[in-house]
Amino acid sequence: MMYIYPDKASKWYNRELWSVFFVLSCVFVSCNHHNQIHFEQLRTIDNLIGANHTQTALDSLWLVDSDKLSRYNLAYYKLLMIIAEDKLYKNFENDSLITSLADYFQREKTSENYLRSLIYQGIARYRIDMPDSLVYTPLKIAEDLLLKYPDAYSLHTKSMTYYYL
Image (cartoon, rainbow, N blue to C red):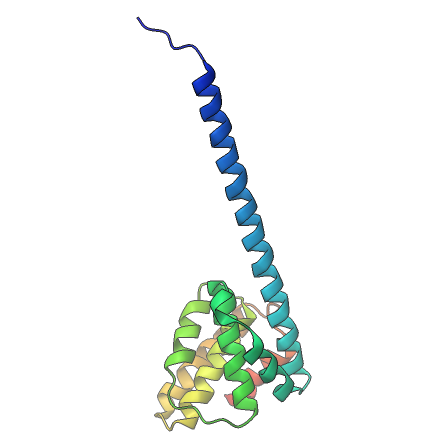
């Protein structure tokens, strides 16, 4: 039977392992910190849109480096672009982007962004002259969510849902 005793090599190995763990932890905390900063920046832009400073919000969105955003923040960024451009009367060419955003936000049924993506999916479909049944479908899903989770959404988003229904 062979026994293995700790020696200098195994201590060095443990030290390297802890060093790698520490560096990875720092990277994770740093990335999480940047994600939070980007999220707060997008939330501020969202508030500008809500306060009818849409052109300022759109200008701010153009300054955001979307390549550095996390997946969630990138989806939020794209949703804000759609909302801001709609408020500035830009025409929708198709509904593919807003449909992909609705699919992405669908994971969180009580997410304000999921409800808003459904509303804007209905708006986009209406504006590109899709059949009424396709326009109505995401709005009906939004209404069902409002009935199922009445306290999860803002009054503004609730009123938008019923306005477009």
